[in-house]
Length: 421
Image (cartoon, rainbow, N blue to C red; front, side, top):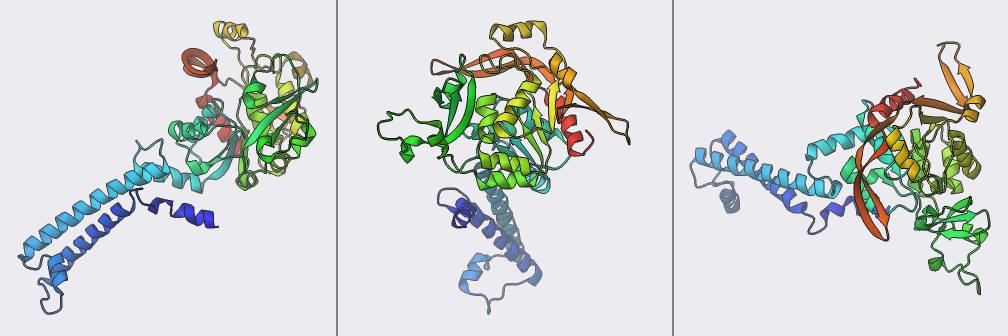
């Protein structure tokens, strides 16, 4: 409660630039009120008004001049105060996107607060097309974004700047900092997101989050830093209450495409998080990756992705959006050179799929186990600026890539939200 009260009055701190402009607006309104009162009364009440009141209302001047000056100065103070107050509030509410009008921001916030809650789980760049598609819909939606537990604070700024997602729409999944661990089939324990992303020669057996063991001092004497998985799992971070509330209120839960082991699965390996997803009445949708990840999901089909999620988290997806077309030959070769291939249904999966025909509508739905497969053209191929790390340096390069097309995702999201899929 104390924290909430403190946040409510954050804008009144010295140096923020809110109080001074509020005061200027009040002064302007008072001057306009004096002008209106002078116009109505037609005279200054010399017997009743104090010396200060006479000075404030320019009592020694002709009536018409008092009205003109008070009206002009009051209007000017009110307009300038409002403009400056809007700029200050924009800086507070959207520090990365204050090139927009304050009224536009208010409309967005109001629309978001009224709408049904859609929860999007994932990281960049996969989450980008999902947010763009949702923002195109005519439905009023309240979008909540749950980031990967190990995401950097820079991602918050990107979401606010590039997708106009407010800070209060972005949810950190854990109450404390967390470290991601992967246990390989041979018993090797790998610590940290970057190290796990570099795994190319070991099968990942298990994945879990733990609080920073150096802070909570859980190393056993003489272990020399070789922590045991069962010991580390005893120090899993607590799931944020905001996560649990968002999942409970969700109309739709969307899992964005991204690295399976470092963006999709980490949150879901937390028992309380996974339980909240399972207990939610909202449909669970996985927007399937377009390409496999070299050395980790190489050769995986759609069924392999769904099976891995189910095995490690106990979560069965209700829907999976899968790209039905083929990637262009030049781009496909570019990915193949890096050890990556298109994620497809695969011949075995297609043989195992069943078709459900609804008697009332005659429409058919394809099921893979108990997941409804929606197979559509979902891709756009275009040069994009890609950011990646090499030898500790951040490199930006424009190159052709495959990405989910927001224009193609939007109508599918709309159908799902309106129970027409």
